[in-house]
Length: 206
Image 1 (cartoon, rainbow, N blue to C red):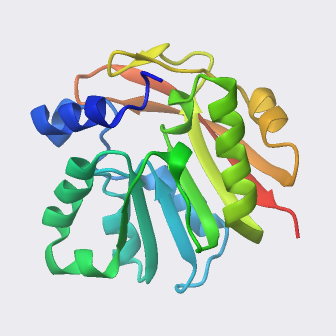
Image 2 (image 1 turned 90 degrees about the horizontal axis):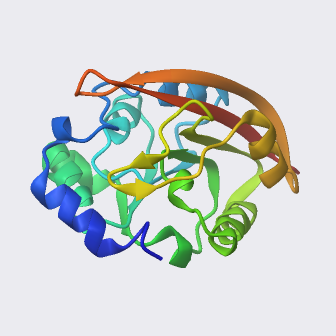
Image 3 (image 1 turned 120 degrees about the horizontal axis):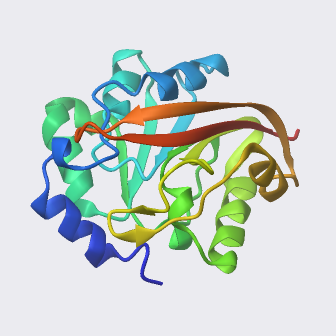
C-alpha cells in the first residue's frame, strides 16, 4: 500500500523542517483539552499514534504524565522529538512501527490519533486498525481520533486520504465503543492555508 510506506515518510522527515509540513501545531491545544476531558491519572498509559515529531508529547510531560508512548512509522520523526526533548525523552516509550503491524503487551487508557487514521484507505487496513483499538484500549478507556472532515483536503503529503463525518466514524467504531462527542476544528497550516478536521471521542465498553 502506497499511503503508509516507511520510505515515503522517512523522506518527508529527512527533507522538511517542522514548519514545512502542513500538520504542524506549535500548541496542540485541542488534543490536550480532549485528553484532559477524560480525567486520566498521571500514571495512565497514553499512546499517540502517528505522533512523529508532534509537540503533544512535550505538553503531556509538562502536565506530569508518566507513561507516554509515541508511535510513528518514521524513525527520523521520532528521533527529531527525542532530540528536541533531550534527557526528558528517556521517560517516553518510542515505537517505530507501521500501525498495521503494531503489536504490544501494553494496554492503554487513552489512544490518541491526530491525522494518521485517515491515511488508511484500504478496507482491510481500516478493519485492522479498529481491531487494534478494541484489543489495546482498556475497558473504560478512551479513543480520541481526528481526521480530515468532508470539507477537508482529499490529499496530504501527496497521498490520498479518506474523509470522515461524525456519522461515518460512529459506524466504523460502533462495536465495543460508546461515542462521547464530536467537534470540528479548522487547522491553520504554516503556509497560511486551512484544513478542516473532525474530532471524535469514544469510550471503550466495560
